[in-house]
Picture 1 (spheres, rainbow, N blue to C red):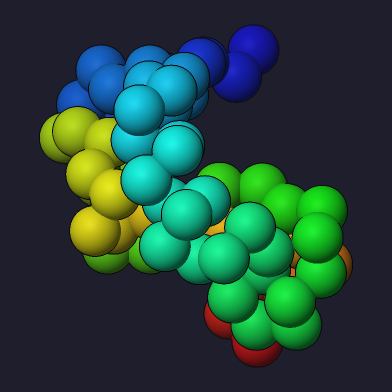
Picture 2: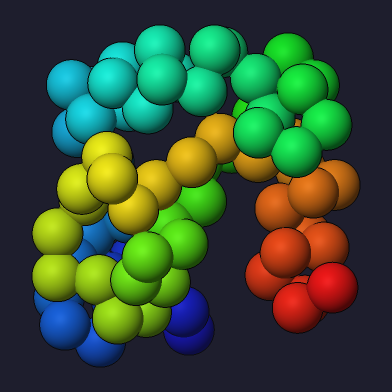
Length: 73
């Protein structure tokens, strides 16, 4: 069964203040295609290696772009 935490124990829940900072910085849309519906993506480091939820390493991606990025395309 998948865990709601990464290997380092970081929960998937991103604090509301971090989400707010990311949304504002990314102008409330996907940073690739600008779609208004988005998810949060840990990119630096990826979630599996993240020790904290830092707005500097999270961006907004629509579900389609998030899937493409996660697949390495």
